[in-house]
Image 1: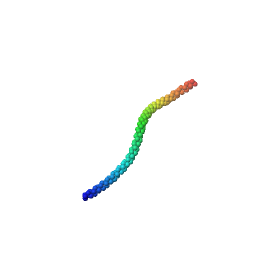
Image 2: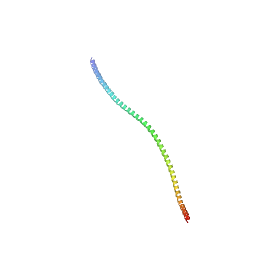
Image 3: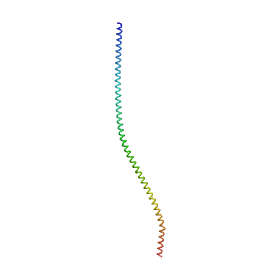
Image 4: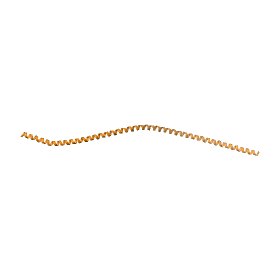
Length: 151
């Protein structure tokens, strides 16, 4: 019987230890469960924050895509305008060169005409100088004719 009292006491002690362990485990499980719920809530909050950030990023991306499309259209228009302006510039340069050529030809013609005018003026001056003695001779002959007629 000495054994059974000791056994009873050990059993009782084991039962108490078991109950104590179950209580500790229960508390630990409840704390883990509470921690898991807290972590789940925190993850939910983070998830909502990330969803908001993701939605904001999507909106920015959509605006950037719209801006890129607008810039692409603008670039196409600007390229067409640039090609047109380059064509206009080429045409203006060719027209300027044609006018410069025409002006050079007119200047050459004017120099030629000025040379001809100078020659004509010189010839006219020489003719006048040549006519002076002729007029003088004619005048003398006329005077002589008048004198002869009067004499």
